[in-house]
Image (tube, rainbow, N blue to C red; front, top):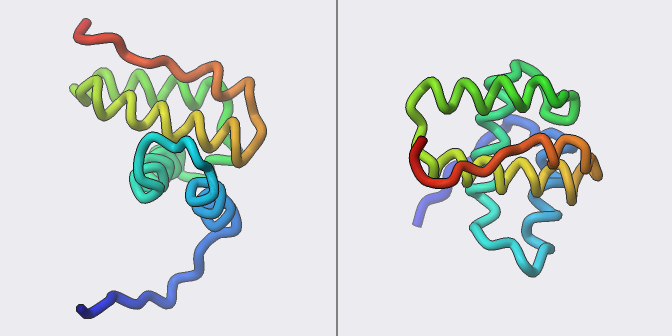
Length: 105
């Protein structure tokens, strides 16, 4: 099977998060999903997620809701970002700012 190769450097934060995700025994979803959600968050921010604030989290969750993103996708992003903030960055304050969606509104 052919593999794709890229010369793009991987950021130290992404590398650390991937290592944490692969090493975490209770991660309830594939590490690649975690990385994908965090990458989307970084694109939304326009900067590294390790510079995020509680206001940034509020804005991204509001944007997801207003864009019609479904609860399953929002909750997947919440789980991935909680992992990033709790395990990789040790930022409990930001993890607490994330809100899980319960069904439809």
